[in-house]
Image (cartoon, rainbow, N blue to C red; front, side):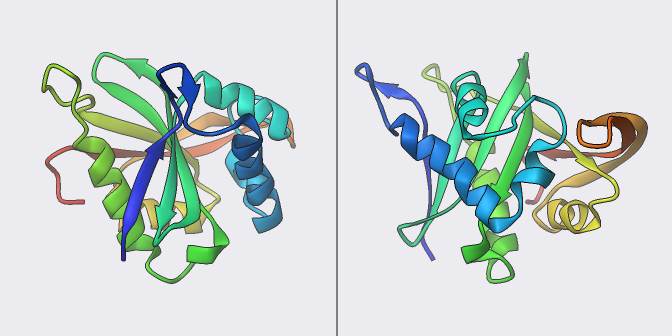
Amino acid sequence: MKIELIPYQLVDGIPTFRDSDIRGLFDRMVSDGSADLCCRYGENIDDAKTFLRAMKRSLLFVVYVDGEISGCIWLNGFEARWARCHWVLFSNQWGRDSEVIGRQVLQDIMNMKSEDGQYRWDVLIGFTPSANVRAVNYCRKSGGIILGEIPNVMWNKKTKESELGTIVYYVRGEEL
């Protein structure tokens, strides 16, 4: 299985993906039924247009498995050598080798280096709604370490209530 991460960035002033490609990632989440779970919390991402706007402010990677678009992962909230991590795997990979893909993607990101040869991140942190047991378990099986839960850390814009959230982190050097 060949797993590739293609960053959404400018190369000599030309983006690696068209805006329509990035909006298409959101449309794919909608068709898979995962957009609501991925985008119900945090930023006001309600449609493909706001998803594109958010991705232009984030560091987005499109995940390819054997040449097929299979998900995306984006980082934001950068501070020092850590970032917030958000990701989704598309239905073409559900249940197959999803844990292997998750581990490899996170390992690749954690091993990225800057131009000066230093690692870019020491830790990635994610907040997952505790009620989404499937996602919490997937994070753990993909190498995430569950730190614990925080009451009211997840704002659910659909119910307009705060919810219990699970903190997951990934550390470079830890076995992913």
